[in-house]
Length: 249
Image: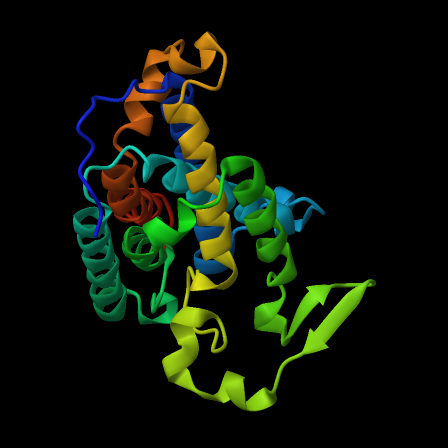
């Protein structure tokens, strides 16, 4: 089990600002998604070559930042349980109000589970220095990134096809073998990205980065970045309310 941090750690303003910018990008992305796939509005940008990369980039940034933040937490188990329960709340809400967009294992489910797993595995993870941990877990993330497509490895270099029966068991959904629902973020490969972020967190709490990384330059982004969970929970109902008032749906 984790030990509570006895020393107050210096907050890194840059992380809050990046988190704030990222949540704004996520809101804009979901606004476009709602317009195109729910309200049938033609948004030309959604047809651009960049779209398949934008959502993973936004979500990946959140995952890395969450991994960094786990090093600042006094209890990742408590944070993990609360976050996972918020994910379950979204499951219930989408089941009742938007069954076509039902979330089985979304980003909050993943984040909560990742926090708990980090707490349980921390003694082992701490044996590896950041200079090793970051590249190792980034490699594992890339190596397993095609799990949902049925194989592991590096396309064009080395791949291993996985047994088909793994993808027929719904109980393996959290691991990534049984893709289902909206906003799906399975533990594999995303847990490896989270762990890579946790090693970056070690560098942050050791004051490894330049002084400017610990200062706050953009107060608005910083304030937004400190309330991302609340914003995440509320942004879709607000967006849907605005769009329902704006369009004859």
